Length: 238
Image (cartoon, rainbow, N blue to C red):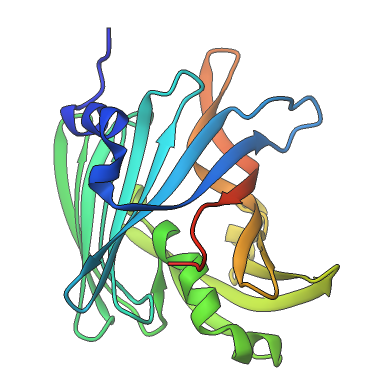
């Protein structure tokens, strides 16, 4: 029996409702024993007045949709609103970004309990559906050596965390960017994230780091540090 919320079940049967398919990602555990992908996800986008809506739809090996993250983005991939339904972790919620990207308002429903919070920030806000686009939009400055501070949205915690985004290397015509926590306590818990693109097309090849789905270890769900390999379905990143 499918116990997923109705919206997740609907996306399994009609994913095109979330827009045009941009890429598919096969998600592997980084542990040495990892074999087949343990999750797959799709990026789909819809044109919106003043920008686009981007959705990341994560499925388990049986094709059941377990997580949906969606964001309303400006043409420069600035996050204006973020929403998520996370069946594994038992929460849904949203974040509204206002005052020119400086003020965030959170609403979270976790295991049936509603809570709210707000936050003021001074650096650009990024989330899962906006991160790659933010890198592409700032590609030239990053490759030239600029390091950019960003605030990474973590809806479950109703806050953002500071990261530094920088260009790392160009090898075999593939460009890799590192996204590193800028506080030592966060660095102890979260390893740097790495995103690799085909340099000529600026389309994603690989992501390494923390991902939204969790890994079942001996019956307990744990945070997952993964390797995601991409199959690009669109001629350009959106």
